[in-house]
Length: 213
Length: 213
DNA sequence: TAGATTGTTAATCGATTAACAATC
DNA sequence: TAGATTGTTAATCGATTAACAATC
Image 1: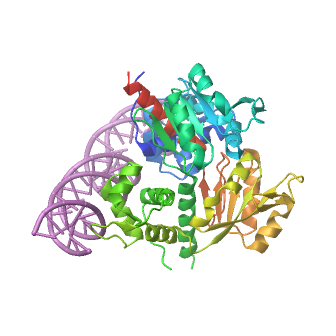
Image 2 (image 1 turned 135 degrees about the horizontal axis):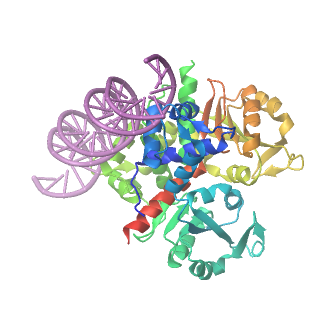
Image 3 (image 1 turned 180 degrees about the horizontal axis):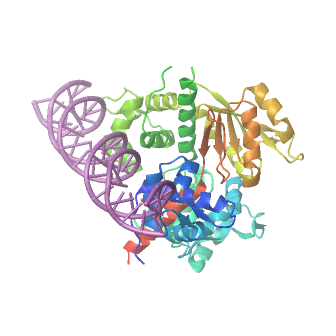
């Protein structure tokens, strides 16, 4: 299947549409217009229409889009169909929160297990997923053909965990530790930096408060 | 103090620079060039220089920037100087993880307390911050002059929590629940959508894996 | 038919990159 | 002086918006 290319901005809006559509009360005839989506999310209607055109061809003049079909089209586009196995390393607060997040499936990511250094956690189930001791990481990731590793350990351990994941065949790393990981060229790293949002929030608020003066 | 305007893209890169500079080993003469930063973060050197020019005027030809001064300039620009009080609502896994995140201060956000519906949590300290029962939210937020509320409760409760925060005078809301909150016009909402990153990761990986075929 | 809505083509806007002058 | 680096001005690139035709 060809992977269509899509701009980063558009790609960031698509999950919002999906999210919004899923949260809509499903009452009877479930059609929705691009304009309604745009209003709800504070975007331009033309922009929404253009984004959706990349994903679905189900829009009908005067009627809008069939919500269920649009959800299905968005999920297909975003990867629902070809499932990738993932593990989380680090079963602390953040790791647990991620284990409890139910939305992975919609993006084609299947969370198989967690790993933790703490032997007391190993053997437990968290949100229905098994926790294994860190020593078994390489062995099990190799065996389970894990493609994505999610790093939720303290900054000091992140590089080491990253190396172990790469050795066991992981191709993509979602890094929640505030560190710049070094990886071989064929491995993809995506940094999840809470500080980015924090800065944006802080700045927007400062601007807003300043306006009012 | 005037709040300079800065593009969204630039604003998203500034915390990365700050992060990187802070994680650098501080060995002797601590100068760093825009090119070095760019290489480390996978950006263009001209872009880094242009971003930094908005924040600092400490760059010297041939020498680069003084790392400590650049850190200070970034923090000042990002709001370190004018501190805003915040609370977290919801002391579940995610709330706890946020309470343990030490980086708020660098962006001028001071985390005062957490609230939770669960009476058993109230009275405890988590990562050194007090947890109060949800019933006291309005009273205490009003009294403490809280400006930012961080919502880390399940989706079903988010709107209700949001309303309570707004009533008690909160001006900015950082929402981790996958819901579109409705707020009065003078309140700022920033949605933290893990699904956005997830989608980006999933798509980038699919593209990467497809390339190799 | 008239009105609402989609989808496309052209114009505008903004961000990135390239080229270059300034400086230590 | 020569080379490395900053910072600025102009050119390019890409994304958003506006205008409009198509359609139910």
